[in-house]
Structure formats: C-alpha cells, structure tokens
Image 1 (spheres, chains in turn orange, cyan):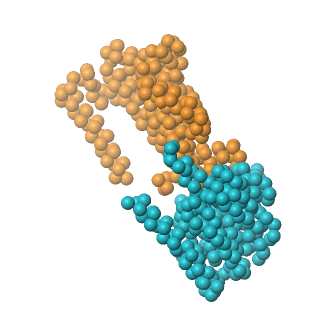
Image 2 (spheres, chains in turn orange, blue; image 1 turned 120 degrees about the horizontal axis):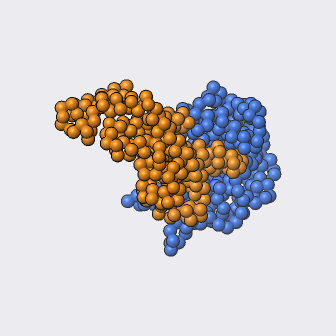
Image 3 (cartoon, each protein chain N blue to C red; image 1 turned 135 degrees about the vertical axis):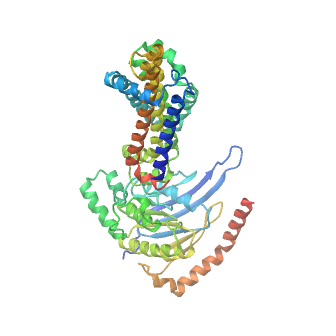
Length: 250
Length: 272
C-alpha cells in the first residue's frame, strides 16, 4: 500500500513541478505547454473524435504486429530451444539481425510496403519478435531435465510433452519476453507512424508539429505513455493469472 | 505380501559408460562392465558413495541415457528409450510445479489417453495410499518435501509399471521424514509387488528396504559385492533392531569405509 501511495505522490509531484515551471514562466510555454493546457488539448481532441480514431489505428497496428511476432517468436524459440541442430543454423542469423534497431528498418519497410498499415505491422513485428524469441529459447534451454525425463517415463508423447510440460515450464520466462516485446512494439508503431502512415498517434504528433500545435503534440505523447503503461499493467495481470504457480517459487 | 518371483525382469549385460568431459582429455569411466539381473518383484538397492555411477546406471535402465557398451534387457527386449513400464522417482521430485498434486498423479494416465473421470478416480486412490488425501488441489510449492516425494511416488505407481526406479529419493529429506518414508516404501512395495531398483548411499536404508543390496565401488563404477537380505517382507520398523540387520549394516560399513574415505579425500582435494 505504501508503495502505491509513494507512486501517487511521485506522479502528482512531477505534474505539480511541471505546472509550476510553466506558470512561473521558467520554460517557454510554446515549447512545453503546462499540464492544464495539455489536459485541455486531450479533452478537445477527444471531443472532436480525432484522438480516439488515432488511438484505435495505432492499437490495431500494434496488436496485429505483436500477435504475429508472438506466434513466430514463440514457435521459433520452442524449436531452436529444443533442437540443437536447428539452433546451430538459426542462432547466428538471429544474432546478426537482432542488433539492427527497428528504426533502421523503416526506410526499407516503406520501400517494400509503401505507406499505410503494412510498414507499421512489419516494424512492430521486428521490434517485438526478438525479445519473445530470445526468452522462449532461453526458457526451453533452461527446463529442468528431470521434468522432461519424468514426463517421458510416464509415457508422454510429443504433443503432450509440448502442451503439458515444455510450454507451461517455459511460460514464466516467455511472459516477460512478451511484455517487453509489446512495449517495444508500441514504441515501434509510433515511430513507424511518424514517417510511414496517415493515421495513428505518431502521425497525429507529426501533423501537429507541422501545424505548430505543441499542446496537441504533448497530448499525443501523454496518450502514448498512458496506453503503454496500461498495456504493461494488463500483461502483468494476465501473467499473474496464468503463471501464479511460479510466483512463490521465485 | 508378494514374494520375489522367479521371472527375470531386468538383465544388465556388460554395461559400460564413458563421458567425454573435455576435448583432448581422456574420458571419465563412470561404469565398467556391469552385469546384474533383477527378478520380477525383487527389491534391489544399489549402494555406493557418490560418484560411483549408481545414478548413471539407473538412468541407463530408465532409458534416459544409452550405455557406451553393453545393453539392458527388460523382459528380454533391449531398452532403447524411456517408457511407462519403468517409471522413475527422482531425488528432486521432478513434480510439475504448474500442476496440482492430483494433476501430477494423473499425468501417466493422461498420457495413455484415459478419460478425465476415470483417471481422477484412480489418482485419488493412489493419493490416499500415500496418505496425501486432502492435498489433491495443492500445488507442489504449497506442500513439504516429504509430501512432494509421496506425490511423486504415487505418480510413478499410477501407470502400473513393471519396475519402479528410485534415484536417491530421500536424499533431500530430513532424517525423521526419511525414516517414515522408508517405512512407507517398504509397505507399498510389499503391497504392490513391484520390482524396485533403489539407488542410495545410506547403508541402513539399502538393507532395510531391499531383498538384495548391490554394493558399488567408485570410478570406474563396478559391482563390488552383493548381499542377500533374508528379512521377511513387508519390512517393519522393529527390524532395524534385529541382530542380523545391525550386524549386516556394520559389516557393510567396514567393507565400504576405505572407498568412502578415498571419495571424501578426493572431494576435499578437489575443493582445495
């Protein structure tokens, strides 16, 4: 409880200092509008429906890209974690692609997919797939050998072994990978929309910068922050429900 | 009580196992030409200091590892891989922490494709036989080490295997729990008549439980001697005070002492 209270204190302290700096004229209110002005902008954008539209566009992109990344990352992680020969082939490729920041993929994504949803899907995928893959791989490699042996001597076939042993045993490590992947994916979608889209929060920020509407720019940034925070919290909630069994053993 | 039958259950023929630890270095000889037979319904203890290869031998019998030389026959067929006719009780329990006690115990039946209703009934029966009734819906992390090992024993018995392989099952338990579980295993093995191969480094445990104690020496792991235990089964606590029991334990200790000493000396050297 005290933790939550301190969190609230910190948050409102931050807002208060920001407001004070703006009100006292310490910072140029054009470059950094005060929280009240930003709040007003959020309300205006909500009322005219544009904020909701952009939020939905961004959310749709992040979910499509993330779902594909999660599916492929988990699948590849399971296969390479289990089969040493597959990992010998795939690991060097993954390790060479992984250091390329998603932003660096943007130009080629536009070349390949043009402007619209597709480059965003692709960039979210690129951002999210590696943490999911790496965590799944690590999880499968780290599974207690005697649990696998126990399943085998009890007569488990490949599908039961996968479904009832490998996947559940890996989930406590796969989940943080998914959470990190979703977070990176959310950053990537905004970055992609700054350049390669005609809707979404990134596009909205970019448009308002051109129109010199700083309050709307910051309003967009605040919305991104709040949604990212919310997604992380939801994932955490989901995680605790699914892998509650592992909490007290950590 | 089931007397050991005359049928041959396991036949270990000239089994050797070498491990290559590092390239360019000679391999470690974990087992050297082991010959051993286990009759149907017999309870055999593999006794030896740590590092004598007894767990390696058990893993080979389970089918988890292949021998470098030789072979192991189960009812006359060579063992190539693990299967449910030989289930294992592990020292670290190896329960599935994401499953309740009930789900863990049911696992072997689920693997056979049995419907949920029937397997629940069978599992509950075995949970009762290891005195865990009332803990069916607990997760492994919610119960004690002794209870985990009871659950693990039930899980190994449920698929009705020919052989139960126990790999130092009580090694991680406190002395009192250990004694209680020994008595439990004595009772269960007499009730079910299962063939049991039981790996331990406790002389008393080996003699108390087994029809035959197979004594192993350190690297390379070889069979040093075998002792028939003539005490009737089921074994009961009073037998620990039997003159023959006490004498046998002492004799085994005398004969094993040099090996144990050497082992702990080399362990100490390795640590420095």
